[in-house]
Image 1: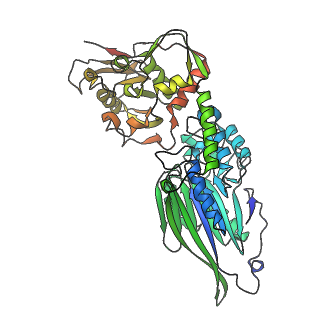
Image 2: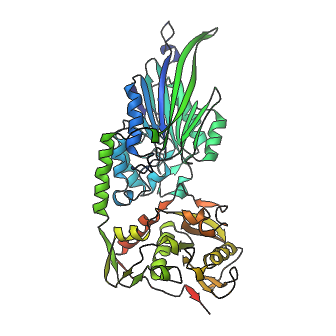
Image 3: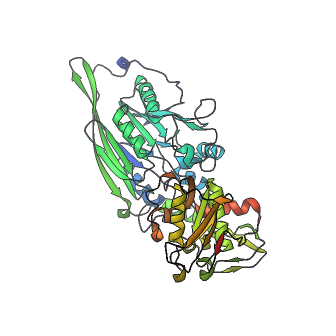
Length: 503
């Protein structure tokens, strides 16, 4: 199978359609596509997913022979604990072992900025597609291409790459911008067809709304998507859509039957498809990929012992302290997630802080300390809320103080006075933002972990709030703490009166 790259703008060697065929019709052929998306964790989870099981699915199909295309729908260099240490380099090394046909840029490819994105593209031994990822000169991000043409026997399959416009606010793309996916798909699909592509595939890391628009436009024949973490495949006889969940827990395998038929006005290309979902819990891990993952796990263990910085003040994460009132470590977490996201307000629940220990002034904090304190792997979501919403959020956070409940909130960006002796729902007395009473009708961005954003710990008002940065685009809290502490080298969190309890 030969693959030719198209460099984005538009430089392609066009062929007249009459040159594609000889006097006789080509024989029908079957081409298998193996598609996965949103794959940033190298390890399996409860016997499903991960690099080693994904490799088994791919290798088993290749062993059967024939034409096999492996497509990856983006999001890999972040977020994971290891990515906080190597900015996603390990995931590119893993993907390099899978012999991908193509990958599309996802929003998480920009979490460490455009320079790191370019570096990771340069390390890939497979084509990285980014037709609508353009820099200030209207050029595709360096190292990526708009599309490829895969030659499978007598047939040519064009594959173009699209990234969600939401990357602009979900991640840190710098001067990279994202043109409209539908307009880009229409232009690039036509370019590919002019170059001889019989079938055109959009490999897209696009959200559900963009998927719907691409589906409605029918400028491409197949949409292989990512971003939404859904497991869905649909085929109506003319258009096929597939997205494969996340983390290679499931893999979509599509058999395309390509053919040409005689018609009154000449030869016509026709295709059909059959598909199946492979649950990777049903396959054994590939030994070579498992060994590579274990190598990275060992490196991760060593890296966790690396010092981030020194606390010049005492930190107390014991249960009674962290769930009973303002605490210096709680302030540290809330400040870190707020700064990392640029949100107006930030919060961290006491139940998410778990190491239950004291740190004396002068203690060197390591990555392992932070992982021990924040062990749940939560990511930081940014919501749009009103001032009244924030008051309601605080009321829930303070509603079970007497029980030592984990919903107790530590905050950043506001000063709150509350009375824990009053009835739940009536405990918040005053909320100040920027030295003035909070505007109850005003709008604020609010950084909070994905567990609370999903309604955990009784925060039932949060799931319906508009996502500025949603769960799929969120970055690990641990990595945000790593960056916050290491950027300062010395920190001095205190109990500064942002939560004032009166009796």
